[in-house]
Length: 227
Image 1: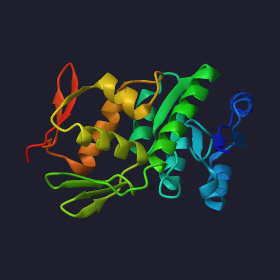
Image 2: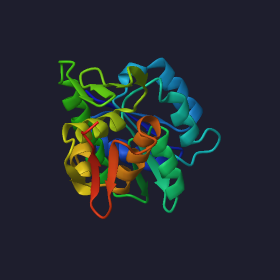
Image 3: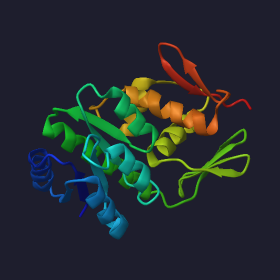
């Protein structure tokens, strides 16, 4: 059974989300602040399938907590932010979050996103071979989620890896933002702007001169295969 860790200092919201997820067959754990959540994650890193993480919490904020735990767990993290806190959500995705939803939200939408992320994770885990995709000096191993440039390993989040894999599998083709979002995030819900945020993060780590990932203005992106 998948366990969802809900980190939110607003007990009414946390309990509402917990009840909705448990109605769908998930196990949940609620932490009311960042320090409690950190202690739980450190003690049970392999038990957690997904984390919903409130950004605005007293003491240890969601952004600070994400930085501290991203190398301890590789499960999806969905940020929950106050309405209008766009900068915070963008920062959250850049430091390792996979998605975000703004308060107030419809709990059914959050549940749908949780399901979509877990489906995507399961599909990834079902890949047992260590298939290699190589374009120029960039190489990825689909079974082990490893990324290399000039044979040097580069740390990627799960979502960044999935996006890079999709681009490389379709090297030479122009992919619309809608295509990318639908395939990588596997949901109809959410902010398509997360595609651009993750593209920027990939470029910063792997392609600072934009040699491989080209923006096709008004359409989407293309991974160039002629290197």
